[in-house]
Image (cartoon, rainbow, N blue to C red):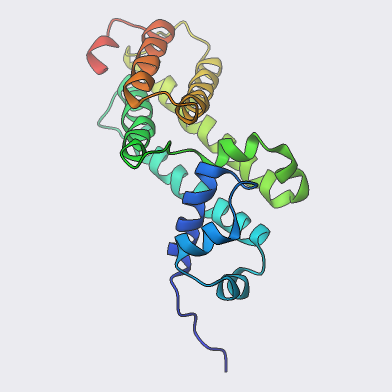
Length: 209
């Protein structure tokens, strides 16, 4: 008879992702993972086989949960297109950085950190597949929000829609890196606001920031 697991797998994956997103794969030790998950090394390896397997499962969970949060903001029909992008950047992304700063570190991003370590994806095709899925999903959601804004007048209609979406996706990654480099949440917010106003301005934009 198989004994039931005595831990919450979702909580363990979230705890592991919280470590990986800040420190990256290589600089996250097994000891850190055990402490974060509240598990002994033997229990952790019995459950997930290896650090590599835990990383893949944590990344899968991270991609799913971050995608859900971003989708909720970017498809909110109560908001115009510009307000959706503001909600993504100023409230969700920088909100995470502000919360993490209170604990003395940057929020980090498991996707960005893994992209910056291409050898991790090269060693496991599942990692590359998850990263590619995350990018496709994010691009699709942001493109949709930009298109909504161009139709409702809150975003410059002359911008190439997909290029504008790529600029937003690049800005998200850039904000994460700046935070890791020591930029404060207020500095990140000003950077995002300047970028949005300069690149996406329309008559309706000012009221949405």
